[in-house]
Amino acid sequence: MQPLPDIIEPRWWTGKLPVAPESFTIDCSTYTLDDKMLSRGSALGDRMNALFDEIGLVYLTNTGLTDLADMRRAAKLVMENEMRYEAGANPRNDLEPNVYEVGAPLPAWLHYHHEMAYVGTSTTMLGFLARHAVSGKGQTFVSDNVKATDAILATEFGQKLKELGLCYHRDLTDRDAFAGTEEIGVYNHWQQSMMTDDPDVAEQYARDHGLDTEWGPNRLLKTRYYVSAYEYYPPLDRNLLYSSVADDGMWFDTWPKVQHLPYDQRPLKLTFGDLSEMTREEKALFVDIYDRYGIPIDWSVGDVAIVCNWRWAHGRPSIHLAENEQRELGVLIGAAFERVGDLDNKW
Image (cartoon, rainbow, N blue to C red; front, side):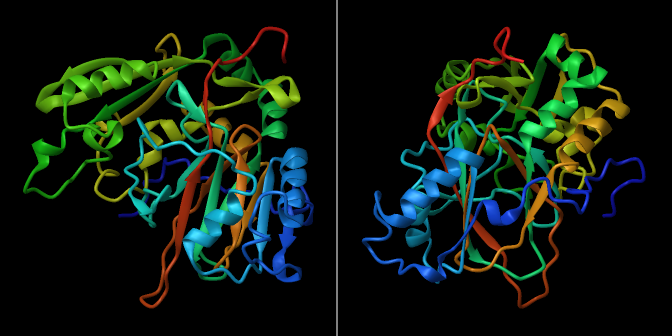
């Protein structure tokens, strides 16, 4: 199914790099990635942490690694603590212990976003591990969020986001309601998102994560989360943009088995905090702000990237592979933090 003409398609970047890739890339061909080098305090680990502290982004190339467990060890030189992917929107499964699949079909483009911005417990950083890759296909893009924040605050829309905040609306289906049927129109079941089969436990878990809850027909779990469009980032002592159209029905514009649904029936919706709707022009600007500061990451097998979830947004275009091609990233989710929203006088 082809996207409709009025769909806002991301362009991902302008062709001009906001940050030189060599500033965050480490060519690991000069290291021997043995047990000693993959242990904290190694020369590689020290270099990675210095780059991450400075830029919020580290990209390892030419690692020679093929096993996800070894790639995870490399990522954990920076990512000391990890969290379980709980109350998340995407239907992620484990590829390895604490290594998740992306949780999205390859033909769907994934708008720039900050991971788990739609719940009270978010994550500090992400790790991406390239188990299978095809050069020139399946790039991930990261967007410089410090620059994006400055740009959006200079607009009337950015000031409106600052004033009104946001409400994230999510509809989570009941797995049992689709037993024995093809899951048309399904994004994620509450059983998988909340990691329980008990509706009372799921409801309480959602509330513990700052969500308002309501049950709909066929045990549809409807949640709302009210929060700032920005989030305070302590290392820079300032508020940064922490939201995008990825949490709106737009997320499904190219999503198989969901894209056919009218917007008012899609599993996600994003409104201002007073529940007023964003205009198409406002959503287009939201997309464009991130596109202006995008950088492509062209994966090779064994590549590892660690991305600060405040300082960088991430996303990717649709991916269409030939029959003999594979593209698979493992995902690590870093330490949890409780969202505080924006702080006064930190603009």
